[in-house]
Image (cartoon, rainbow, N blue to C red; front, side):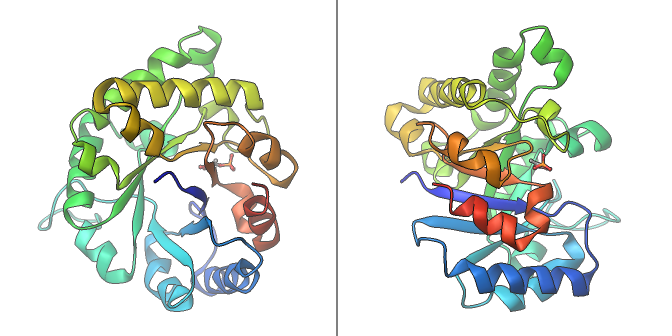
Length: 251
Ligand code: PEP
């Protein structure tokens, strides 16, 4: 079933004590959020275990921001899927544009990462989205199609139950520029069609597709009112528990 999700991506922000305080504040306010809206916080690796202790027994789920493309072994600096599970993660983000842009994350690597994450019982939030140049060249549909197909067409309809897509136009991430609700809706509907072309209408209809890119309390309502937008992946605004919860109250 399609879920409403609001996921916070803390990126490389907060010390561990600050992260624990932020998680506590999110938990304290989460009682205001209707139970059909799933809250997730994605934290830096160092914060996962202590934040998991704060989230234990609450309705807020924990996500990593990345996951290794190998199971285990001599891969210095990497963090494996089973380590994330043992730290308390239910989800991992994969393919965030900052990872694609600064760390050379390719669709081929994302296939491996998604395989390993799913095999270890993690749910995956796969990020796709065009950059400004691609948007200005009117290539946004093509880019989102290629990114979605190159990764997800390697999986089964059963796997798709454990995958969420986040459409994040790169030009809207951390820039204060949000895609209009119409711009976001047309791409979300298109991505859903790309999913339907391979997996059928039912899988596509059940797929949760989030919008990300300068989503905040002032624009979340209009975005979430669109028929193909099932929630948000929130960067900057997720560093304030008040704003994060306000966004989750925008359905
Ligand atoms: C993100 O990093 O996933 C994101 C959407 O960031 P922001 O909300 O700050 O644009």
